[in-house]
Amino acid sequence: QVQLVESGGGLVQAGGSLRLSCAASGRTFGMGWFRQGPGVEREFVAHINWGGDSTYYADSVKGRFTISRDNAKNTVYLEMHSLKPEDTGVYYCAARTGTTYYYTSSYAFWGQGTQVTVSS
Image (cartoon, rainbow, N blue to C red; front, side, top):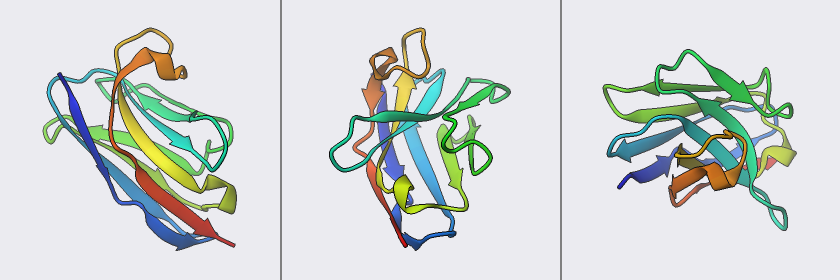
């Protein structure tokens, strides 16, 4: 069983930055960040493998967001820069147990989410 707790969300102006953290208890392998805006489905944002040497990003965040992890602390991070109003949503971290990193169904364990609001 894996428990995940996100933190670091908040209100920021467009162009600003935030750093999200996801503290895990239990063994994790691939980890992902997803987000869900108002009235839309949860969408993939970023994924990192256990070793931290392989990452994937949604096209909408590529070049602005960076996912990383510290396995000694069992924590995954999401650095977000040049934030846009369309980045607004609840951000979730998740532990991957399935094959395809960009499908929500590949993740069995989810955090409670942290709200990110970007004002224009």
